[in-house]
Length: 135
Length: 290
View 1 (cartoon, chains in turn cyan, orange):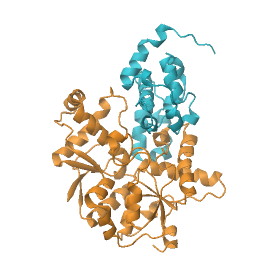
View 2 (cartoon, rainbow over the protein chains, first blue to last red):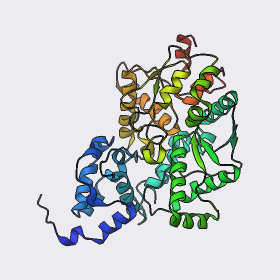
View 3 (cartoon, rainbow over the protein chains, first blue to last red):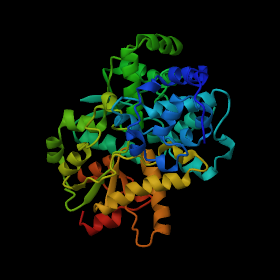
């Protein structure tokens, strides 16, 4: 698919917002691929970490926000740990989640959680899950 | 030696055996775990985005409470350790965020506490040699897989407990207890973590935890040692699926490192809560003559 690269896309407000919220500088990434190679969930992501960063560099925020990737990131920091440029894909995914959650759009509904899970799971799973998925 | 101790939400509920075995073992090793008289949940995930200042308030409250009791605070849960240690660094180094957080929670705190993990206390304050001397029941012949997961180790510049690519602190402890430690390729990989909560993520968690278990079993581990209740929950669950879907897969017990420590110090299996584990370790221990 042809994608037209426009100045408005790569200088959009939302990109600035993503950089501000995440504390990451998108242009530091030179696409070595270490993050995708280290990521334990990249196999299930529609857009893996390295490609997510590239698409953000090119201003394709809408495509990135539609993908399942940010909801699958486990925040294990293996990407950041092995990045030669100290870019944290995990922080970027967290920023993308936050942008969605701060609009009041939850990814999981508390009322849908199965009772056996609520009863048997460690509290930390519930608390951290709420923080990642519920607005 | 008396150390201020922060248990966190899970050690007070589904992981009571982790808490109890640590407290008892600590006494036998010459130090006392003094639980904070007042504490709240740490938030169970460090806010990765620097502008999420609200996420720092709960852990800062814990740190401020602990500072009133002394200059160190010790945790057992890997996640609490990660959240408290990283938050403490932010509060210490970033005065702007410190002012906002401390103003909000109405505490005067400057990040001047040392956040320690129980493992660090054993290594750096008690010493593994001393631990070895205290062992009453050496766990000879027990091949224990050392599983670190993510939160104990990463990011290295904040956590610094051990080398984040090839840590050995668990193996060193297991060696002191007489075990045969088994390091395996996936020992620092994630178990699936908070995806446990997602409705469509079961397969992914099973795959991630399954990879860890197969890597450990493939390296000869007969039992897995962890310091994270969420890792234990995910690994336990994944083994149920592996057992059903993979012919010949034999589930192995997943235990907290303090349970193994307590066992070697002479505590009984029931006292350690080994009878309540999803995958029973007792037949294995019996087979090994422990």
